[in-house]
Length: 152
Image 1 (cartoon, rainbow, N blue to C red):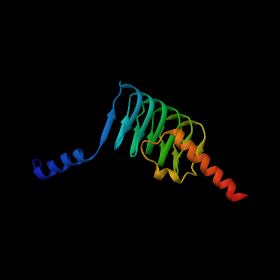
Image 2 (cartoon, rainbow, N blue to C red):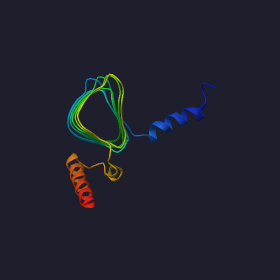
Image 3 (cartoon, helix red, strand yellow):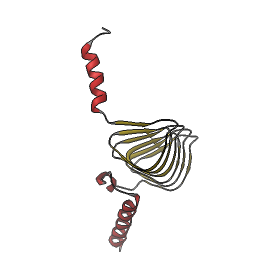
Image 4 (cartoon, rainbow, N blue to C red):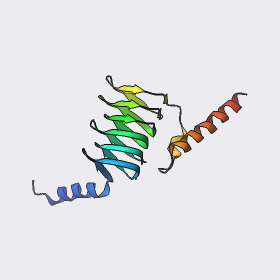
């Protein structure tokens, strides 16, 4: 029961196969970071974070800079723009000062959000993890131009 080797192997296999990065409380990081798999930040980060998977921003985290990811879940403080290919979820007591581009956006009561939210993006699924915010803005300008030319 408690010493079941098969159960132990399953747990070890799960951790070996999953990519999970953790920047704990007390960690200060500046620069560009590109991650594979799920990332959790509980420290201070200044720069650009990119992951094709999930970014979890803990309650004590402070991020200044741009974030690009698949799913962004935040309970911390972010000052910068967020681009997500799947969804952005802000949990109390999150603070977000910046713009959001994502097909899905949710926010709990008690969250402070100051910025613009664009949920009309359909091309983010095709973004490479190395895509920068400048590239996303270029894609948006191209999409807006295409829409205006179709209306004319």
